Length: 119
Length: 113
Image (cartoon, rainbow over all chains, first blue to last red; front, top):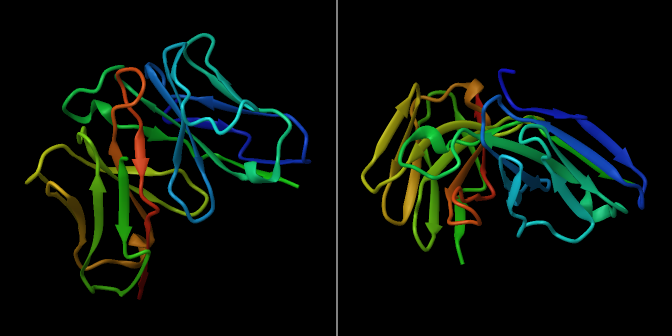
């Protein structure tokens, strides 16, 4: 596809429910990132994949958050036993390179996000 | 601790009234500074990337500059369609070789006709 695609665009969950958010990165992009954006704030890093390997999950707020990218393309962010504080927009981004190099290959391209509301 | 601070939080301009947005940063080693534009209900859209002090980049009415401590996004003769939230981010040394972006809170720009 032409850009990063995320689904669903909106998700309403009752507290305690499990949710799964999907990200389709730009074809051929090696790196994939998940960010969480609270209302009025900038995005905050959650986790990073290089192909199918999850190399950094330091931003995941609790063990209720789990992400996978089993075949190195599509990624799923799963939140178990959702809480009200999980309400936010979840953004996915992809970039072409695996390693940071000088130049534009480090650009992260973002999807439109999934807005999660936990009631 | 790596940190990005943007100012002002909100900026209201009249069409044609030029101004600048500020992004100050504290990082252990700058690997890149990025400007994004975000419209309501959409994801951040890439504008510029800067790597070294003194570097400048331009695109239409926007010009981004970088010093060792801060970056400016200059908007010349803005139009209403420039209204959006402008996000600044720095690329850090994260896990793995890629690193992750640390964002500021953004500056919400409104341009009135």
